[in-house]
Length: 165
Ligand SMILES: CC(C)(COP(=O)(O)OP(=O)(O)OC[C@H]1O[C@@H](n2cnc3c(N)ncnc32)[C@H](O)[C@@H]1OP(=O)(O)O)[C@@H](O)C(=O)NCCC(=O)NCCS
Image (cartoon, rainbow, N blue to C red; front, side, top):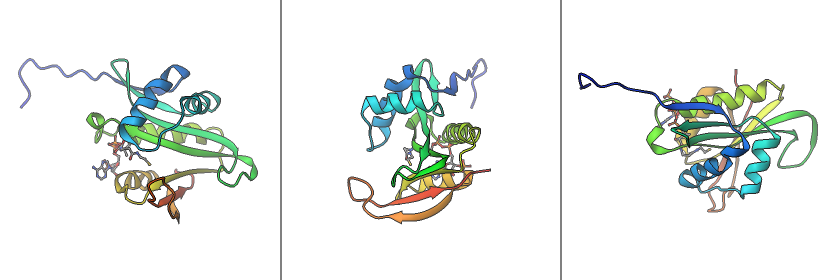
């Protein structure tokens, strides 16, 4: 029950990511996912394609959506002449989960990429990660093909795509 004089102050802030957030984003990534990236890749992805968002609590990064827009389809390198968006990674520290932050981070990245007229937004997710799949489907992504042995440990991935409304 709420104590009589209790005051609840929300301290979380969701905002667009900058170069200065890269270290914190990498730390959240390493705490929550086995797929990690060299710090230089983070720097490139966050600064050249400004569609990533972070959740910050008290100055500390506690969640992120790493989103990029490329002029080609990443896996086969085919130039499309139309920009394609990618949700490269998404994570929220355990303490902050289940409060809608994952959805807000993802939606912010999606909206930002839609604003530059991407023709498709793609992402991959582990077949066993039903939590993330639920989130992607509820936002409007469509499940595509299964890619066998996509991850280093041998787990398959579902490909998702489309432009959520
Ligand atoms: C996936 C993740 C980012 C979701 O973050 P979150 O802040 O907890 O998500 P939200 O609170 O915004 O919930 C969004 C939706 O996700 C789904 N979801 C969240 N928690 C869930 C759970 N425990 N079980 C099943 N579905 C769940 C629901 O569809 C939920 O929508 P609803 O609340 O309307 O039912 C978070 O669980 C996470 O960081 N997981 C580890 C990293 C990861 O798997 N990243 C995705 C890689 S592809």
